[in-house]
Image 1 (cartoon, rainbow over the protein chains, first blue to last red):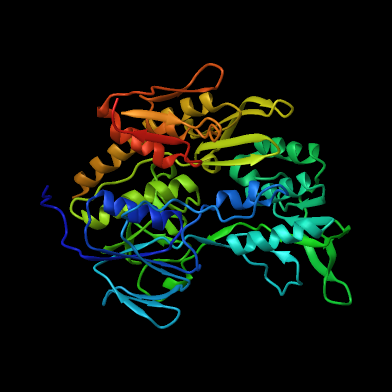
Image 2 (image 1 turned 180 degrees about the vertical axis):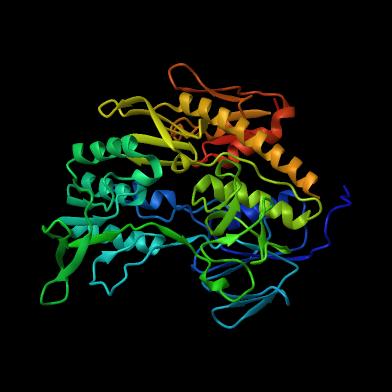
Amino acid sequence: MTDPNRTDRRELVIVGASLAGLRAAQALRAERFTGTITVVGDEPRPPYDRPPLSKQLLTADARPTVPELPVPDGLDVRWQLGCAAVALAPDTRTLTLADGTTLTYDGLLIATGSTARRWPAPLPPHVLTLRGWDDTLVLRDALATARRLLVVGAGFLGGEVAAAARTRGLDVTLVEASAQPLQRALGTDAGAYVAALHRESGIDLRTSTTVEEFRTHDDGQLAGALLSDGSYHPADAAVLALGSLPATDWLTGSGLDAEGGVRCDPYLRALRPDGTPFTDVTVAGDAARAPHPLADHEPIVLGHWTNAVEQAATAARTLLHPDPPRPSPTVPSFWSDLHGAAIRSVGLPSRADAAEVIELDVIARKLEVVYHRRGRLVGALTAGRPGRLATHHRHLQQIVDAATRQAAAEAVQGN
Amino acid sequence: MQITVDLNLCESHGQCVFAAPEIFAFDDDDRLTYDAAPSDALREAADKAAAVCPVRAITVLAGS
């Protein structure tokens, strides 16, 4: 099968060996790309799935085995693992790795994901973060021996860690700077629902509260934390769950607009600061800052599992078929499991100016909240109501499709 | 084409319903239902549904 628009690229490099990187490699082969694919990863292990790291893998009865992602037979990829990419020179199509190795490419796909936001001061031992497999092992050990855990940040990651610690019988204090957990992402009502789940489980949730300082014993071990409400909480271990940031620092000085995620066009081609695209560099997953119809076509970072899967396919296709490229209009979605509530979201609830509670039942673990922006549906959140979620998704997909068609028509008129 | 779903793995993420509503749906009791032998014309949608399932509960096989 010949494709007149297909490029003659032979050497493709994918930076990032997690979900988006693996799925991009699979997409390239599904598009019948027969050239060389090199996948660069900073961790010394094959691709694995991250959502279980903060959920079932933290519970006492879980076997601590890496949740590897299946790599299909015949994928024919050169894995370059355990060595991060540290610099990119797009003019000479050269990638530099941490050990000084350089790789040249005909096409590059950036899928370096995200990192945990850091604490702005030195930390005592047993104040942990959770992002990768090594972090999970350290945290499992801490949960196995600690009696009192302090979790800083009641977003989904912090909430899941706190919930897992409760199932192990630890005393858990969960500190959140906002008035409700997830308030900015999901609004006050959904935040209150999540707060009720935490408190019902016995977690000591402290909202509108921050950590003033961590204190240590004479031997340097963590003793506890002083909170902004004046209270002191002894703790044997603490977890910082302050959110994530796109892992794009390594692109500083490369000529890509990579501040806060690599800005890209609807086809996921990386952009220069002046807005012109690199035709040989695409981006997928948590590292990408791409325009979305539900965000008025502003570039946004979607740090979600399904987004990594969908953008990987688009970014791979754009690399092989740059002219004409194909946009990727999908509805964002994410999930969390908290205390037996299967929380599922579609669209962009954080963009809403109004939230309507259709159903809210903490005991039965049911929830349905619908989000609007300027009178138009922009998102929905459910627990235990997947049928309602599917209905909202269908309506959102129609809105996204219409907005995508309109943007395409305006682009044609603009030319 | 044959489709199987491991309902022991399924966590009702709904991604298959989003990707291939011709094959997958939730019934009035929020249980997942699906056409186990859909037309081969739906192969692309079925493959997409399997690819976006976060718990990899869906298997798509050729044949009838």
